[in-house]
Image (tube, rainbow, N blue to C red):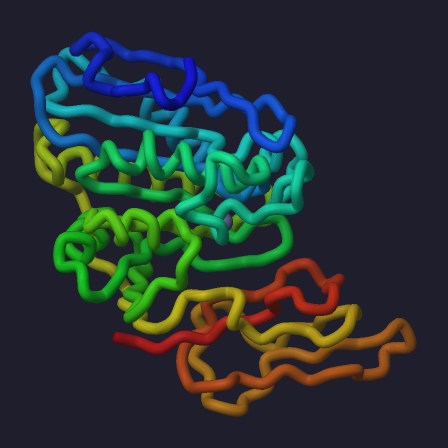
Length: 318
Ligand SMILES: [Zn+2]
């Protein structure tokens, strides 16, 4: 069906619906998979997306598991999910789209007349995010980087903060501001509480991360009253605060072989050495230092780095 014809309220209650939203953009035929679980009774709607970056798999699997386990006859409200939000990138095992090089997490709110990635953003925002009472975007660190398993929210939004704490991740990250172009910034522009996750990534699914994500989605469904019961959320161990924009992270000015000197969530002082870039004669090319005091929340785990790639991100503690 064309995205313009998709209205979740038109689907039968007490049932699961799997469909594809199909459209053309930039001369390419695109198809967005949608999984809708319509509760038997009316209630709130949780919207969950995964695969906004095509090389992040924890969220895809989480949506599959939750979709299979839910019983719509026992639900008050709906789950609306897009398990692979950027299908060209997903099938290409890449963060960005092979069709136009677009990063889907930088082009919201998108453009229906634009290139494929912008058109996908437009339809996701207009037809999927717009249907949410609470929005969750499941990311992870992708193939080349490493991040702790965490849930993030926009600091001024009390509803998002409450939902983030209910999710039950060890690390909660609050952002004073959210850069434009993201799914979360699009949801915020709609005045809607929005959350996102990160995890270890590296192109595989750690069982503990899958457990945190699936338990977290169940917790949010309970938090919204869509599922019965109370959330099972252990208190978080780290409540971080700071800019989460990895475009602003410490980056290499040239290609080389990275030797990190810190580990994830390690406290560092401003100016402390984070790692060194070597050439192929083992000579140091570049030394990377912490721009501020805080905890390390991102490390480029693949030793080979290209110029401009994010290598380290340091953030503060709430
Ligand atoms: Zn991502």
